Image (tube, rainbow, N blue to C red):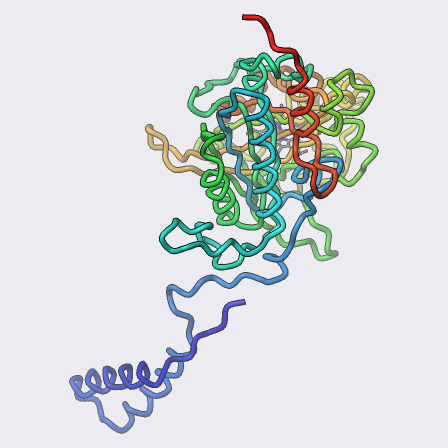
Length: 443
Ligand code: HEM
């Protein structure tokens, strides 16, 4: 908590002298001017300085998400206000390099997410920490979630036989205009925390400590707007940059049985044994043509999405949590057959298997070359089967009316490692062990 700073005696003398000079110069009666200058001086002394840090709250900065567990943090844990996805190329020519990379990465993630004091080094050396967060690194609700890309496995013969069954390189969908410089990668790190600075601090720490293993390839930051809870204390879903509530029909991340069904790779899933407890991550950087959207009539916006804009209710409901009844509306008179939510989830017995957990952030990156706002959705979704989840849903969405307002330009598919179960374990250790046991191929 920052406190208002009182001025020192020297500062007060300087302030009063300046004021006196000014007032005399203006020919104002000295007595009354002096009295009012004292009042003003106190107001100045009590006011916050322009460069004082905005106050944070101790309870927020000290918030931490446990690192150890069956699954990695940052997937079903509540999404904080700031997110960042960074994809890397990995430098690891041997199973031993790969093992070293995973151990080091785990060590950094434990430190950054649980907090601590960076080592004090000889000033002749670069400092151990960038210093952005001050002398103590506080967790600030940070999670760092590690995923592995298809290219990591495909280019290394000792990893290739261990590749998760559905992992593949993201291909172009009909409405995509993928830009090579923000696609794919050997490894993804999803940073989520209360503040953008904590995410940046964590990224800089990893880059500084792991240059021999990780080369950054692309990065996208995002955030979600905070909103006031309703009068009854209920919190609704956050809004995306189209102004609609995003997350209304997301499967409940607190429902562990449902998460086991749709998010986590389980024992019976015909995946390599090391992958149990992991999940597939689909990342898409989707530009929104917000200027065009803002000039589209409200009724048309709502028909395109299939929900009321302010309440988030489906077209046949009154509150955000109401469930649309498409069976009663087979011709799409209430909710258009090509509305975003109806195509994404037709709510038939067959479409249940396509459910996924969405965890998106809004991004705002600047101005495009043709003078438009570069804003959009950093779409991130988790599912136990990439083809049944994201790929099936995106294929159903191909050609939707919303496409006139959105353009996917980047992203990638990654397999999120299972969690490190207890202190001493490291992320991906089962995979590293299995890779070391893969017999060398004859070239
Ligand atoms: C910029 C792009 C997108 C925007 C603006 C957007 C917006 C929305 C909105 C406003 C909703 C309704 C509220 C909710 O249930 O969350 C929604 C629902 C949904 N969206 Fe998107 N979305 C986008 C991209 C995608 C993509 C790429 C996918 C997957 C391929 C997707 C899948 C879904 C699903 C599964 C639902 C829930 C449908 C239901 O169960 O009723 N969305 N989206």
